Structure formats: C-alpha cells, structure tokens
Image 1 (cartoon, protein in one colour):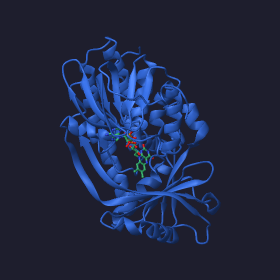
Image 2 (image 1 turned 90 degrees about the horizontal axis):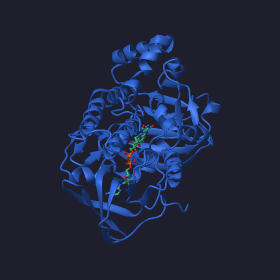
Image 3 (image 1 turned 30 degrees about the vertical axis):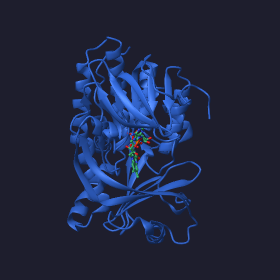
Amino acid sequence: MPSSSAERGQQGATTETGEVIIVGAGPVGMITALGLARAGIGVRILEANAGIVPEPRAMTYHWTVHEGMQRLGLLDDMIAEGFKLHQMCYRILATGEVIRLDIGAMEGHTAHPYAVVLGQDQLEAIVLRHLARMPNVRIDWNTTVTGLAQDADGVTVEAEHEGVAVRRRAHWVVGADGGRSRVRKSIGVRFEGMTWPQRFVATNVVCDLEAHGWDPCNHLVDPADGAVIAKVTRSGIWRVTFSEDATLPLDGVVERIHAYYARVLPAGMPYELVLHSAYNMHQRVADRLRVGRVLLAGDAAHVTNPTNGFGLVSGILDSQVLSGALAAVLQGRAPDTVLDRYAEDRKRVFEEVASPSSVETKRLVFHSDDPGRLERDLQRLRAVAVDAALSRRQFMIGHRLQTPSLVAAA
Ligand SMILES: Cc1cc2nc3c(=O)[nH]c(=O)nc-3n(C[C@H](O)[C@H](O)[C@H](O)COP(=O)(O)OP(=O)(O)OC[C@H]3O[C@@H](n4cnc5c(N)ncnc54)[C@H](O)[C@@H]3O)c2cc1C
C-alpha cells in the first residue's frame, strides 16, 4: 500500500472538528475529496471496505465530465489508462443492422468530443493516486458509518472500525455512500421512485469481438436478448450486460451467463468469463440533497438504470459543483445558501434529464417488443446517424446533465 496520509487509516475516537467528512471512498466520494483538497480544505473519508473492490460497474464517461476531470488533473491519466471512444452504435440482433452515431459531431462544441472508457476500479485507482499526493486528505478504510447527529456547529459521525466504535466530528458531511446510503437514512431523507422488475447481469469477459466485426460500444437491441456489449480495457476485456427477471434465483446465474453468450456472441469464439455481478435497478432520487450540514452526492442522491451510462457521470457532475460550492462556504467566499442551490439543481437535472432519458434507452434496447414503435425508433436513429446537426443534438444531452458552477473560482 502507498504510504501517504490518504492511504493510512486513523483509529480511535477524537473530539477534534475537521472541515469535511466524506462517507464513502467510491468514485464520487474520492472525486469530491480531490476537489475540496485542491481548494485547500481538509477532508477525512470514511470507507467501509479495506480498499478498492473491482466490480463490473461504470466504464463509459461521456464528454460532459471531461472538462471538470481535466481541471482536477485526472483526464490525461484516464485517457492514458483507458481509451477514447468516438462512436456508439445500435446493433439490431434480429436483422444485423448497425447504426453508428458519431460523437465527433460535438467537435466545436466541446474541447473533448469523445467518451473515455475505463473500468470504474481503474478510475478509482487513478483518483486514489491523486489523493495520495494531497496532505490534507486522509482515508479511514474499514470504517463503517452507523449514524450521525448534527447541531449548529457541526456533525458528529458514529462509525465502527474493526469492531471498535469511533466518533468523528466535522463542520460538514458529504454522504457519498452509494444507493443504500446510511447517511441518507440517518438524516431522514426519502429515496423516491421505483425499482425495476428486471435486474442487470454485468459480466467482464476476455474475448475478441472486434475480430468478429463488432464495434467497441454496442447497444444490442432485442426484446428478449437486449444488452450493452462494449470493450472495457485495451487488454481485451469486454463488458456484456444483459437483463433478466429480478426474481430468478442468483444461484444459477453463471449457467445463465454462458447460455446468454451462446445465444448472442459469435459461435465458436473463445472467451473467458472473469467477473460478474447482478444488480437490481432503480430510478430513485432523494427528496432532499441537503439537510443542514449534511449533503448527498452520487448514488446516495440518485440512482438510475445504467443503459445510458449516466449514473456515475451524474455523480461526477454533482461532485464538481459541490466541491467548489462547499469550499467557498468554508472559506467565507459564499453563503451556505449556495448549497441549497446545489441540492435543487442536481435533483432537478436528475429528474428531468438523466432519469427519463435512461428509462427511454432501456426501453429501446431491452424492451423493443412493439415492431411499429421499434421501426419508428430506428428510423429516428438512422436519420441521426447521417446528419451531423441531429447527432449534435443527440449528444447535447450530456450538456443538459450539467448545472453551472455556483461560485467564482478560489
Ligand atoms: C452494470 C452497471 C454499469 C454501469 N455503467 C456505468 C457507466 O458506464 N457510466 C456511468 O456513469 N455509470 C455507470 N454505472 C453507475 C455507477 O456504477 C454508479 O453510479 C457509481 O458507482 C456511483 O458512485 P458512488 O461513489 O456514488 O457510489 P458507490 O460506487 O456505490 O460507492 C459508495 C462507497 O461508499 C461505501 N459505503 C457504503 N456504505 C458505507 C458506510 N455506511 N460507511 C462507510 N462507507 C460506506 C461503499 O463501500 C462504497 O465504496 C453503472 C452501474 C452498473 C450497476
């Protein structure tokens, strides 16, 4: 393990009040910590796990986050470790038709007209390396937050570290502890929305689909066997994510994965299944993203089905706005009402843009069982594919996920 303060756990109770505690060293917690630390704020992250846990989750980061990632010094590392994606395609399983949409249509509207692809664990490792260089960030691993209480001056966080109760105090707390957020529950915030009757089975598989004519990023459209099939690493790991009834027993999932591959992947192609996980899917948003001195970000604040790849992207955009606003409040450059604005803006774009567009793409890719509607959808996509202005409009949705910075730069 590296030896910087970002990597050393700290044990024992303390009465000292820190500036910010972030609960959760997932990507959103760590990116928020980096933004705050770079603005000169002291941050302590409390994380239940012992380190980064590889999971087949996020892998595609849309152009909309790149400017902010570059400001944090992360973008070059992301591109160096992952790769740029210039096209996304819809592949119709029944007919073999492929409709390619060119992200390059965003040229002239952003300095970064491409998506970046790399595994969520790779991204987390990059952010962790950057945090390790910050003397004002510390990560307490193996530390599970159990509850919190706030007063006029700060927040007291209760946690457990290797069976020992610990108590930490800070002026502000950011709950970036994922969809089941303990922080969200502790502040009495409801997580409104719905849970899908399907789950996603996400698999990492070593294979060479490009040799069989597949694009690096495919939305495989089919009412029974729809999937997102995309290359995750340069070394040849692909992600195959398909949908199944959420009531099926998890016990037989490996057999179902191989059966799915047999139905959909090229016959006889050698492959090795290296990682898999099943995820229940939801469209949910916290009824408030701020309660007093506690703020929510990322999946703790909102969750969506990942067909569009808008979950972490939305969380990264939360963290970019939040870290600037919270640093300004702590440094007396802005009133704390900017945090109310953070809460309102980020909830609104999730409800108005991220969630409905993800629902729509899920419908097209996984539930295209109305032939008339499917044909209308495909006609629209075919038109987009050959028209740069329409393509631009399609990809401008990334812009609509953004909300403006709430403060002047420090
Ligand atoms: C199959 C799949 C594919 C996806 N693909 C994409 C994609 O391509 N692009 C995209 O943008 N998004 C994608 N997503 C969504 C993305 O994975 C999530 O939005 C992202 O993980 C959210 O990050 P987070 O930091 O908010 O939460 P998490 O990643 O869930 O991290 C939360 C952290 O908090 C810790 N924690 C939880 N409880 C406590 C506690 N009580 N005390 C201390 N620590 C705690 C956890 O251990 C964890 O480390 C995908 C999701 C899935 C399931």
